[in-house]
Structures are given as C-alpha cells and as structure tokens.
Length: 248
Image (cartoon, rainbow, N blue to C red; front, side):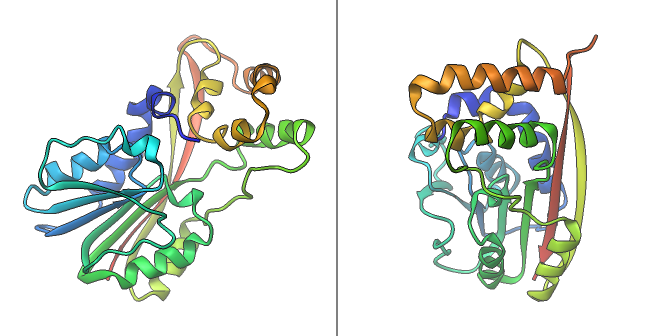
C-alpha cells in the first residue's frame, strides 16, 4: 500500500514535527533507541546521529518502505514487524514514534505496552496527525461514500493532547503534551492532492479498482482545489499535529 517515492515528495515538510518532537526528548546517553513505525528510515538515521553511542532500531510493517532504509551504519538496524505485537528484546532507553500510531488499531494499549518496555527513566515520544476534521479529510470521506460500498478510512483514531496526557500519566509517566499547527506552503498543480496521495489516500486507492483511480482523483482533486485555493505565495495547507513526550 505504501509508496516511498510519493510519501517522500514532501519529505522536508513531513520531517518538521519529527525534529520538534526529538528536541523535547531529554535522554543524554541512551544505549538502545527504537523508532516505532519508522517508514523508510531516513529520520531514524538522525537518531543514530544524535546518539552515536546507541544501538538504534527502526521497526515498520511495510516491506516497501523498509526497502528504502539506509544501511551504512553498524549501529542502525531495521526490523519488519507489526507494531501491535512487536516488543523490544530488552528495556529501551528511548522509544519514539512519529506519524505512525494513527494507523495502529488500539494504539492506546500499544502505547501502554511500550511504556512497560522502557528502562528506568526511559523516554517515550510520539506525534500523530490531528487533522481528521480538516477539509482534506472530510472531503475524502464524502467522496469515498460515492465510490465504495464501505469506507476503508478509519474513524478519527487519535487523542487530543489532554487524552495522551491522561493515558501516559496513568501509565506512571511524567508527561509533556501539546499540539502545533504548521502552515505548510505547497506549490505545483494540485499540491494538496499530491500531499494526501502519500498518506490518507493510500487505503482508498488500495480499495478502489485501478480503472477507477483517475476518475476518483479528478473528482476529489477538484474538491480540494476549491477548499485550498492557490494564492500569491502558493497553497496554504494547515497541518495540525499532536505531541506527547513521557518519561518513566
């Protein structure tokens, strides 16, 4: 289902929340760091750069994404696994998950389980999209009802900052939770459509017969252009993210 090339078209914009999340993790000299839902691994490699003395493991369920993962560093490894069931072999000093938990069923329990896998004073950090009520997603859900008998789109799967505060504090952690809305400036024809092709559109296109893709994208793209008209400086695309950093 995943297309690393399409996902990477806006790699710099998608990386901004990762950097902001990582900046709030206060681990000084961890020995074992895990990136849960690492995708193609470019950002996982940044963890090895920040903590050069650590063994860093990226975990993802997509073979297509992991095929693009870097392999130059002996301290950097990648594992294909379903994050609902994967657990580290020994306590982790840092577990980070960036833009992944929204795809995981029952991710709240997964987060509780990951907290239990932390070393003493270990860190858990996550960020997820909070844009499920944005026009891009509302219009997608509306379009899907006209094209498919049942929707492959999951209901709003994430919590707000208070929800993650409650969840992780209830697991015994000290928690910092917040949200940020980035105003992405996208360029080119149909830039919002190209953006969502890398993420929210993936399950829809996987469910639609291939011969219907072009017509569906024409309809949905027209709705996006009306909702996000281009301006003098490009197309403004609000990009809300929810963050939480917890220390055991």
